Amino acid sequence: MAVVPLSKDEILKMKKVCRLAADTLVYVEKYLKPGMTTAEIDKLVYDYTLTNGAVPATLGYHGFPASCCTSINEVVCHGVPGADILKDGDIINVDVTSKLDGFFGDTSKTFMIGNVSDAAKDVVEVALLGMEKGIEAIRPNGYTGDIGFETQKLVTRRGYTTVKDIGGHGIGRVFHTEPFVPSWGKKGKGQKLIPFTCFTVEPMINEGTDDILEYDIPGSSHKWYATADKKLSAQFEHTILVTDTGYEILTLA
Image 1: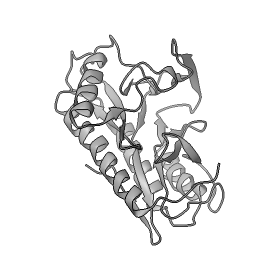
Image 2 (image 1 turned 180 degrees about the vertical axis):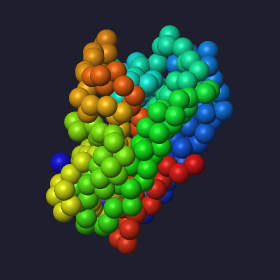
Image 3 (image 1 turned 30 degrees about the vertical axis):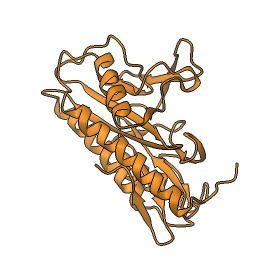
Image 4 (image 1 turned 120 degrees about the vertical axis):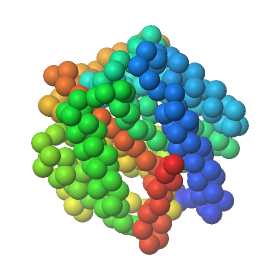
């Protein structure tokens, strides 16, 4: 599928919906604490999104049953909110996508609950730095491999691994489109970064092996994923606009 640049009006719509997605995570963070269920997190996301005139894009998307994804500890991504209870020392990624006026904004953050271990703090830090390094490599008419190369270089030097089969994606008028944005790669390889298009950068960083296990989500064609060795995984995500001179992070809070 050809990637079509956004018009000035469409870029303004993207900025608005991405700001809402970012604000949603800021809102949710205030309530996170031990003893809270992931279903309660999902209700916060649902209520805040609707209050601001948007809809949660994940709800009903290919049968996904919730308004956000909540991925705790060894869960890599697409964790389904429900009866899981946050415990002191957990890490949890909350991934939200808002839809407003026909456009999508996607962002996630890994939060630390209560008193977390030094190991958990470190993997969360590396996930954030890996995303930031990848974003810094973005150039108009550059390549997705440039992003993945810089992410993987930082991550492996810190002793962690990047998930290979899941990554970022084009976004804008639709939730998921080209290009695929990997967390590994070679400079100058992959898909071209077209000016005035948007995509997500969202490396998933594992404490141990990069092998992951896949699990069904009842009633959905989506899957959720966990580390094969049950060690920790952390992730951060921003929606990026490529410009004619560089890039702009649209989901900064």
